[in-house]
Length: 318
Image (cartoon, rainbow, N blue to C red; front, side, top):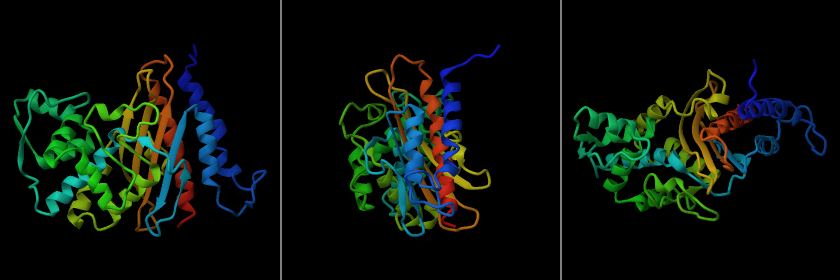
């Protein structure tokens, strides 16, 4: 017996409506493109948004070689959710580089610290640990998306405003963090707290991973953590050719009916034939209207398709 689910319908629609766009963007009616022109990534991403049933899809793709940036809704604000933890890890490493904190400094952990998804802290407490090092907490935040570890680090650094100040030091005037986990995941209407834009985050990632924000050893440590991260293998990275090196940081909030679900991913990508990286940022907002609690997972497929579209554009830059 074949069971038809909303997920199977969505995946089917993305396959039939979006995959052909990788070819039909060339010379499409109403376009000035020829068969030899690269596909219009903006048109493709707009069609993906329409096919997915999402309220909004924001995607930016940045070429780290010359700063060229393309995408869809690139300058609109989206709630970051746990994608902020990439920048948090970068800030911790920058403070270590500056000698302001020590990576091996031990910070106390208590049963009050785990909030929501905190797998590393919960396991440490279960085994009787009462302290973790700054680097252990930072790795837990980036690789395992541990909420409790992130809050401990934010408090140690001076609060969410310190992360906002870090973005400003990178030239990012958009991204902002205002709250701790788990409240930072909630947004209503025009609330700009804890938001970024796809373009702003892509540029900040470029500054952190290809600029001078970190010492080389810290930069390589952060890249290693991103590559090791496994929470986004079915999101942007799921749409990339398997031979491409990539790392990412996801963010998720399934919503509760009073605000949209959010399925996010930010990734650094290396084409095998080039040294300089590319950066892809993707943010999906979907209405929650009494759907099953795990319906937000369907949007993983949307981000995977965005990754495929981005990969084709990247191939034209080589």
